[in-house]
Structure formats: C-alpha cells, structure tokens
Image (cartoon, rainbow, N blue to C red; front, top):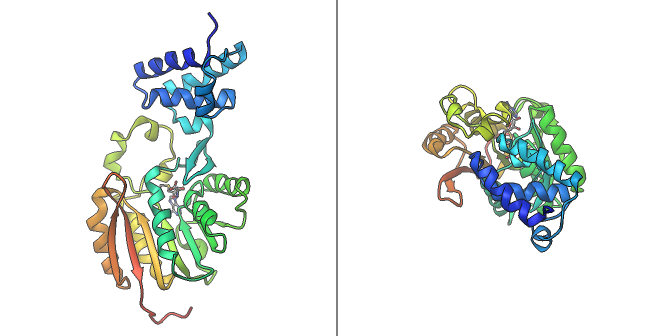
Length: 293
Ligand SMILES: C[S@@+](CC[C@H](N)C(=O)[O-])C[C@H]1O[C@@H](n2cnc3c(N)ncnc32)[C@H](O)[C@@H]1O
C-alpha cells in the first residue's frame, strides 16, 4: 500500500503522541507541509496524494527530530508572528503568541501620537516585535537591539525577506549600543529573558534543551533585565511616551514596585494576555522632565 498524505498524517500523529510530543498531529502536518511545500489547507485538499520514496525518507528524518522534542519551528525553520512569516532556528528564541500583546499595545499607544514616531525594541531576538511594528507603521523610525549576533542575523534576514529593511538593528548589552547615539523614543518595547534559575529544570524539554539560555534566563533572580529596563528607560523616553515590557505572571507586583521606584512614570499598569495572565507592564511617561530632546 502506498502512503498518502492522509494515511501518513494519521500514522505520524499517533506515533508522536506515543513519545509524549506536544501537539502531535499539528507537528506532523507542519512537517509534511514543509516536505511537500504545501500549506496545511493544501494538505487537507490533497489527502490522497501518494508520496514518493524521497519524500517519505525526508519526512521520516524530520519526524525523528520532532520525536526527540525539537521544536517544530526549528524543524520547519519558520514561525508565524503577527501574520508575518519569520525565519527561526537554533540560536534564536521562537516568538510566542502572547508576545503579540506588545505589538497590539504599541500600536494603540502610538495611534494618536507623532506622525513619524521613533521606536526601540530591546532584546529583539528574531526581530518579531520590531518587524510587526514596522509592517504596521511604515512611517516609523525603528531601532532594534540584542546582545546576540546569532539572533540579530535572523532578525536582519527576516527584515530583508519581509521588505522591512529600514529597521536599524544594533548589537550590544541592553542600553549600551544606544549610549552614544543621542536617541529618544516615543515607544520602547522589550521581551527580555525572565526565567528564574529555579524554574529552569521544570521548563518543557522543547524549550530547555533547544532554545538559547541567553534568551530565557533573566540573570540572578530572573528579574535583573526587567529591572534594568524599567530603570534605564528613563534616559531614553521622550515626553508623552510609552514603555511596554513583557514579564512572567508572578513578577507583576515586583515590576510595578520597580517601575514606581524609577520615579518618572505617571501611569503604571499590568496588562493580561489572552489567557488572562499578567503579561506586560505598561508605563506612561507624560512629564516633560529636564532632559533635552
Ligand atoms: C525572550 S527573548 C525575546 C526575543 C524576541 N523579542 C521575541 O519576543 O521573540 C530575549 C532576547 O534577549 C536577548 N538578550 C539577552 N540578554 C541580553 C542583554 N543583556 N542585552 C540585550 N539583549 C539580551 C537574547 O539574545 C534574546 O534574543
């Protein structure tokens, strides 16, 4: 009996399930889609398509990687974020759906503001947030920074592929690549690493064994980078500007206290993600302060 797309998917879904892989059927569909260069919808419409031996062998080798809990996005090399297809792979964090909240809130924050806002996305990784903002705000001047050259190489290549090459990518430790540039921003977004050391061992193996530690561990108590962003943003925010930082749900109160300590935010709020969990701290700077802009 020749394997068809339909029979292969039915078998592969059960096979991955036996190995405790999350979303087994979806994984099988995405992997077969990559092998046959078809969307999931096209696969459904071609269930009776027989596979040739080369396609079968290719599918099998990718399925084994998935059986070993490699994230499906590393196997297919792509992940959708805010309707953009981003290239990802080892060395860069796979963008998560909950991070789209940074984009939604960033767009809202700028809706009635400057005609040509200046935006900074810290800890940009694959460039997900910066590129989603760029795609929706073609007039904005966007800067995106990360400490990892490997992550930035994905970000730059995503920008090229998406024809969003005007985004400025810079490398360095948090605020350091900005120190000599004299730039002030209307919006700063960040999804920094925030996993606490004690949580490392209980992370899903897909995450712990494959995604970069640098993208996950927040240093010290897991809050170090969030603290440095909430404090450091003071020097880079224009009047009437917004800071949006993704946090872990249990860090919400600590983040509010830290933001209040920074002493320049007029309004501080915690925004929930679609699951209702605290996910983003939003800080509004509305004073005119004493810095020059
Ligand atoms: C949680 S990932 C977020 C990536 C991307 N913004 C997203 O949401 O998919 C955190 C990113 O922060 C970067 N990073 C870690 N420590 C940093 C530091 N000290 N300065 C700048 N970037 C840092 C990592 O390389 C990683 O790309």
